[in-house]
Image (cartoon, rainbow, N blue to C red):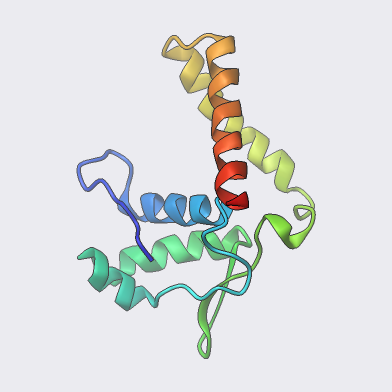
Length: 131
């Protein structure tokens, strides 16, 4: 699995790992049932501590995107084809979205640009997943 991280970013590495895996699921690069590298292997591949990878995997597990067990390791639990989101997800997600949109507005992006960029990102997921 190829992950691109920015070690100079203000975003913590474990969040970057989580974000790249979520994006890979959305783009169809990772699907339900696909195995992820072990925390030790991914840590070695990225040149980071495996505890950092473990923290990212714990977030993904808590969000219901992966399952982890001793035998099979970390496996993608659901993707876009797995059916409707679990109860309560949309409300929790909307709160996170609200903060992200507030940041865009506070930094001067107007509503039309925000809407256009959101549409562009969603379309890129659709296009990538269908190819």
